[in-house]
Image (cartoon, rainbow, N blue to C red; front, top):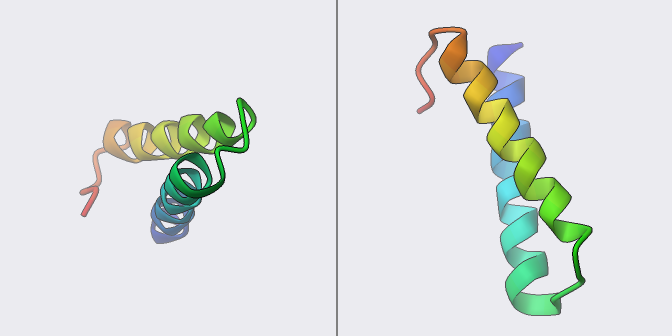
Length: 51
């Protein structure tokens, strides 16, 4: 389950980067970044390695 959270976080960060730099969709794309950062923080708080 932990790996799934990390994979989702990475996918969301990549999606955010593509949306921000390529399409400049707007404020909604930043929600992806926030969700990805929260997923990474949850993983760190749980005491697991991020990488």
